[in-house]
Length: 112
Ligand code: AMP
Image (cartoon, rainbow, N blue to C red):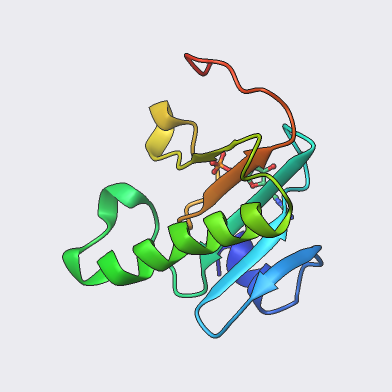
């Protein structure tokens, strides 16, 4: 099981921000911004580089869920950032697709 599957199964605790039958969102344990939430599919897709065309609708719903959480937290007006790290050079550390929702402070570009 991936670390995030264990969070889905409640074997590892997390502060849950949103859940439905196919998506879980929880607060990052090492936040990089005042708001740092991870939005994941419950079904494992290892990384965006391995996503299939058949995963497209689910990935779309992940992004819309991240947007809705940002809206619910009042981040729409000031803005927020969504990040997907893929592979070693992308900075991926957990091989279970996740969208980082970062907000509550200005973000800089380019990222590190
Ligand atoms: P990435 O580097 O894109 O793969 O992101 C993995 C993220 O998972 C990092 O931001 C970690 O801080 C976060 N993380 C690792 N373990 C946990 C955990 N037990 N609960 C919540 N977030 C975690």
